[in-house]
Length: 114
Image (cartoon, rainbow, N blue to C red; front, side, top):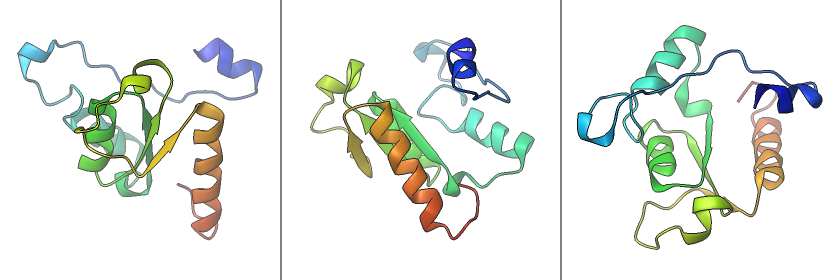
């Protein structure tokens, strides 16, 4: 992932990973907010000013749970997203559309980082 991003001049500052199984019922496995809260503390950002992009209900639940804007991508698992699952703020067909939403939200924030 980092190599692919580097091809476009992008990089990742940190990767947060939950090593637990659902049966562990830990606070860091999505949709629980543990890792997002840890990252917010490590990097001094407000989760409410973030965008969570994903293709599973747990991704959308995480975003909604931390007050972030949630974007469902309908590729991968998102193609069969359950109708009774939590509904995202936006639904897109791919990551390019998700990126366009992030850019638009960043512009709407009057120059503040999102």
